[in-house]
Length: 202
Image (cartoon, rainbow, N blue to C red; front, side):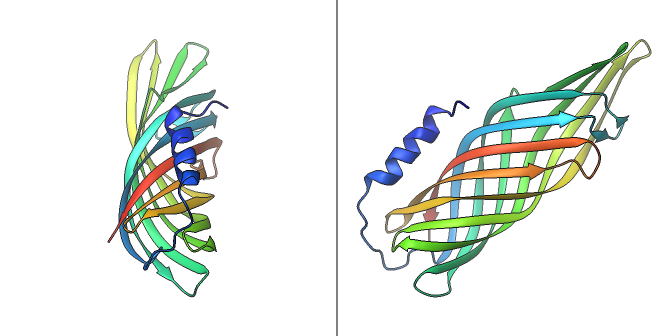
């Protein structure tokens, strides 16, 4: 797997800072931006046009914003909630069956998740994440009768984990992997993401 240069940059950045403790690490509200790599894999997914005869995977760049709230339960344990919004580019998925061709075009997605983490140092948090995800997807089918299209929201769930490091009193950086299942129990519609983010904490 080839990861974008931005992801490797954030990884190096996160390890370059010393372990200085801050007064309010991982406690309170925050907002942030994130970017990285996504890979979508589909096989005969259910769509508004019926089951689409498709087996494809596509890798692309993704970026977005997020906001949330962390709460320190004690010196080591952090829990929190977060909402995020992401878009991707060049991520259309294609399929063919007989005289018909199909395209799935993800427009955007959002996540609502909870996370729980452990402070391995006062300013470095290892965490796991899980929750709800939703993708806005346009399906297009073309055959001898013409072209049909429909757009729907694909509901799903996600799990993941990562590491976040406090860089200064109000700024932290993180690296995270997420797996999402958007199949709605029909066919296969999986998404893998590796995301680097920078948060501003209030």
